Amino acid sequence: MYVGDYLARRCLYSPNKLALVDATQSPPRRLTYAELNERANRLANALQARGIRKGDRVGMLAYDGLHVYDLFFACGKLGAIFVPFNWRLHARELERLIGKTEPALLFYETEPPMQDVAEELRDKTSSDWVPLSADDGDSLRRWLDSATEAPVSCYTVTELDTACLLFTGGTTGEPKAAQISHRQIVWNAFNTHLADVQTTDVFLNIFPMFHTGGLFAFTLPLLILGGTIVQLRRFEPDWVLELIEQERVTLLAGVPTMFQALTESPRWPEADLGSLRYCLSGGAPMPVPLIRKYAKEKGVVFRQGFGMTEFGPSVFSLSAEDAERKAGSIGMPNFFVDARVVDVDTGRPLPPGEIGELVLRGPTATTGYYNDPEATARLFDVEGFLHTGDLAYVDDEGYFFIVDRLKDMFISGGENVYPAEIEAVLYQHPAVARCAVVSVPDERWGQVGVAFVVRRTGKSVTEAKLLTFLREHLARYKVPKRIVFRETLPVSGAGKILKKALREEAQRV
Image 1: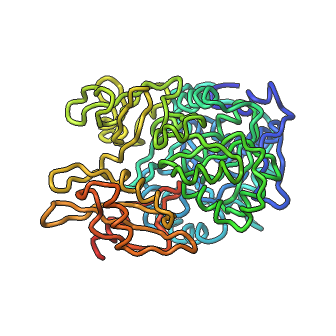
Image 2: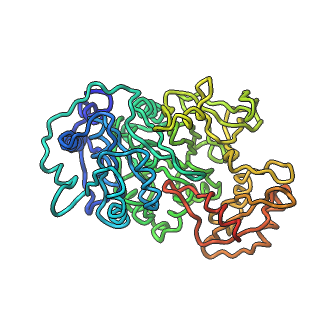
């Protein structure tokens, strides 16, 4: 056992405990830690036979499932680097990311859209493309069936070696490959445990596993601790509600759009969520009306969290007791996190109440961006603080609040405008299900806001009425110039609204 071989270490203490419920199969497949470790050893031996060594990249383009765990843990045993790709991306986008990271092997799912991408890119990349399953020829399934389960060792792996490359959200530009070290993984497990995740917890993973929320927010920490993961193939609200009941799930994490979608499921009125200790919302502030709906109708409490690909992702926590009293807050830094709010221009720490950039320091920071020393240098300051690009403030009690992304803030008529503040007011209107505010150039004011709104099912509201509602709650310079109604909003693989796409649309309408 060595750094990176998390399953072998866990098998010392609880080999026969249920580790994973693979709900992508019917009926769901149940694996103990010993069984999961045996599969990882088999795949590690098969990868080694194909020439994979420490530091080599091994990619995956697939929906979530047991195969993701197989490959992640097999790579850990070899000291290889796991690289999950976002299957939602266009083939041309994937081609650039594959070119950046150059995986020696790239496992892919043999159905659209992954099969189509493989056919288009196989001859354009240096990677050896291997199907997850196939009736003949090489496949991950055949490798597992034919390989030995003998333990695999790579004793030269250290805590600062890279375990995984995760691509940043790409909501404001092309994604960068953040290096996730073994140190980051382990210290994140400490922070997650101290933020009230227990060895007895059952976590239903509804995030995609090419995202830090799916792979590292609860999943890896809980497997290190000895808990149980219930894994979905894709987020499907009806199936999520059924699995919570069926598997007696205790923890559920998601972004507000996911939690809203659950309440719109036909199963919601009869769903039994009594096993949940709490839900954790991240990615954006959880609307208070939605918190109250869960509490009133299902007796479910919420905690707010904050994390990012490059740090954590367990960075801040807000307790359920403070969910309404400190609505909009991300809480306080987790135990092994040093957080400050600093002046954007000077880097000087700011007192409570003043808005500046959130900076973080601690052992859960990325070691940098893969093959991008310039971007890595810009990420950290001379004191070792990672600059998040988020505007924030701290209140007198030490609670942190994210005001907006530094790149989302705009100046209208000489005044700073924070779209997140406008969105928070829009969510108070009973007809608004989802919303996003972006800025567009304006000859008179420099920049003005445009709000994109999805109406709640069965509710009706006009642009004029929404603008009047906003004027009753906000200064006039903050009120958007216009409102655009949509059936849906574009979202990233992590469920975050893609404001870059909305900005482009706003300039056309």
